[in-house]
Image 1 (cartoon, protein in one colour):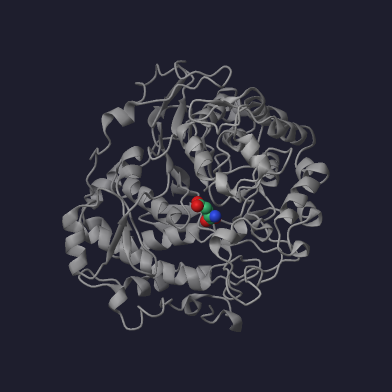
Image 2: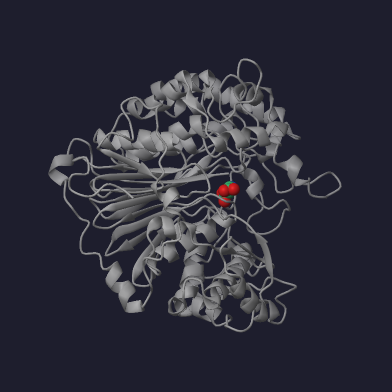
Length: 619
Ligand code: GLU
């Protein structure tokens, strides 16, 4: 990773020679089909909470989709994007900016991610051409047991209760992950990267519409500390446009600024965190305690890295199913020649829906934490195996009509394609946010971060100002299968922080929140950008379809009626109109194009050292 101090020597332009358009011309994919109302595309939100930053400054360009030469940030929060762009302007690299951004999100978007949660940070280092992943997924307690989500009578504790239990709260990984990333690839001192978040928590920030809606929606699960934090002095819940402070969180962040990750995982913060978890536990001796916090470790993961349409798709491996299943779906699309069909054709949607069904059957059968489960990843993602799976899919019929599909989800047998010996046990047993940063040297970060549900467990550590995740609900509730609870295990995720590489360099970053729809949203955005040649914002808003190994197929508004009618004749059963994820994308070509999904308040901020004189300003 480029260090701040050696930035001059290594400064170079690498954004050339990409042949994506030529490729698209070859495949006959149409380009330039704009479907975003220009009012949306041109809008930007003025950011007034960040000292030294203004969207009016010539060096910055703000909006749903913006172009810039020297740096780009895309996140769900205009304030966080502004802070990250400021770090880029100061000469910080993409990792520095991403760290500062995550700390700000803890303050300004506490419903989606934070220091009480975990995530996956995919880092492309332009100097070495390597991809590192810092995996800060939450872990279960060393005392956890597979039956912890069952009642005494053996029945599964209802979801609404499960999500608020101490048993659902994993060891948060975010602080250790951020510190690890900083030590690995950052160039700025921790103090500088946490400072903006501390200031916002102390002096206040403007509550946006989405945060206000999440506060109003989740009062039912808030503990007293959370309720107090989310209400003003008159005891009224914060509303959009209010100024909110969180002095407790400012104090917590100040301790982390001074002492690093130890301040969070050991000592008084850890003791308070463990006490709060215990308070909500059915079996206090089985939930995360001080010792679990003290020994928490992140892992540095080898990315899923597979060829697709002549590019490389790079993404998060297990314990997320996300990267592998995004690739699986997109590879089936390629193997079935999906690019021959138009972006709104029945065939395209049919292939995507069927590919998701087939992929999900395998996801549920094989994926879990690789520290505990042998996931046959090489077999699953081998072209030979995926060709076998693609052969199940045909235009004119559906996999649901294959013998047995309706009653069992019909995973394949990737062990036949796995080079290693298959262990006997593996035989067919059984509110999040995404953001991306690219810097002037070509380093890139694609980071999906979560406290699981919106507002996580709803329980805030009293006096500390942060919400505790309920990530362990991502484990199977029953004590079977590769994703059952085990001591110190990490639950299966769908998070899919991704990059597409051409000739070893990123041309696109993408990712999304959205629970199991993360995979759908991310795969569609990548497909629409790379294969159908859409600009990032158009790629995001182009309607997607979601299904898993179970019926029906849910869809976003805009999937044409005649498509649904035609594919229904081929056997698809259509479900509800929904919104899939909240995708943030950066396209990296001759210039950087950042786009933020209009389904929330997100904003991309571009940085241009010459104030845009070398190029026209953003759309
Ligand atoms: N906990 C989910 C996962 O790791 C993400 C939560 C969400 O986006 O709703 O896959």
